[in-house]
Image (tube, rainbow, N blue to C red):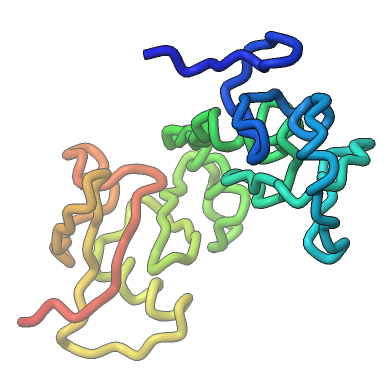
Length: 212
């Protein structure tokens, strides 16, 4: 099906030709009124200025009663600039191009760096030799203790550092890298728990009710 029609005067192809109401011929935009038709010239009805609209395209001074509204930017344009590509539509690029998703790369935890930071901020008895210190994060507080003490003594020291009162239901739990909690035996030494890989430098300890 042929969509283009020829202007009766200049023979140029046009998708939207105009039909003269006087001579019934088809004309392009440039010749819809100015095509030598005497009847059309004599019968032209003046158009009210309030009905005319200016083209919103930069530097285009066309003012006409016929205008087209862009579905992308909602501005009004003359027939020459009615397509988005013809008026450099600002929003066209945003519509055509898909949005790029910002992917945040999660950095893997580094145990060595975490332990180094813990050691720098840990509090404890400064008389304990460096090689005898065991470092823990106890209820979110960084502390260090002597490796030779038993869990019962460790529990008492933790209570003192955290300002908590002792009660019979309190227990000390070791938390592994998977978040699993293990209730520690009060008679076990810290160094023995290190040997059995129950505890390690930098691990988390929790003071909470054991439920017994």
